[in-house]
Length: 422
Image (cartoon, rainbow, N blue to C red; front, side, top):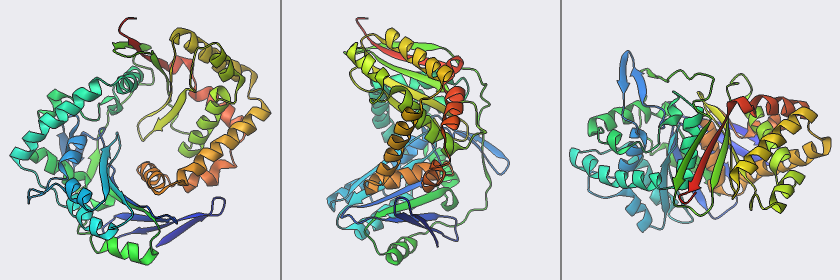
């Protein structure tokens, strides 16, 4: 067992890798809440792959479909209902690069662990239950189609990328899920729900030896000899299109300004921190620029930033609301070019760096946030403590370098959701 302790924030993680390849992490936290998440590195982008030398091309949305079906048991029970009945809050989600199952509780943790580790390791698919799910997921797809936030995000991604699988809607489409059957679900399960592709993270007030023992004795997954090779499209460096506008039934226009980042040679962790600092320098509530936009009633709240990256994609998204989107975008672009030209003010840099550090520490505010962040970073080959180890190495010059390389107006795209009356 490996123990990693970070003295700066007084947090530690215990990591054990079982003989079958399954990674288990435990983060002790003095709280009544107990939280566990079990994730596999398998998401919506993993539709094409080889098993040894045989190639498979799966329908869009199959990772999400598989997540839905995992709760149904051969006995006719649904594991979500079973966990709810004993006072446990359980859920699951699918992203572009991983699928995860989790639950949170204050009591009955080990009773819930029996059910939890049983259904994740024992899929049960029939022609009937797979077909029945198509109507349920079809309704979910229509719900997301009607979501302004989701349309805004997906259009920004489609504007940036021409071929990359990140363009795929996580749930797929009505047409693609129609092609899913039990054989395809089993093929994906046994290809990607393998212990050497998975991680379990637990947070709470547990005895260290006991929690590892209790998890390990419930693991029945075996090593597999098949070689799985993921196949991804080659993505050109240029953006797909500059602007996408969609009209929907909303009250206030929404926008995303996206920047496609092709510079994969940089350290992922260092760049992530630098992007956060750069954004804080440019647009945070503490800046005169934000005050100017607010006083001119161009925005009501601070725009949000997300820096998303994986093995094959990397981009920055700035999202906000405004009654005058064209003016806001013009001012944001001018602000970026101004700071690039003049450099970052020393005091602004220090303020932004302290604010970024505070956000990093807040990851450890509760068991769910902590565990989820460890999982999302694990599938990208990162340990959260890496951020704290590298933080002090980031200076103003590096942030300015990242600002110039990432916030590149030639790689900028704009997604807008406009009210129908506009």
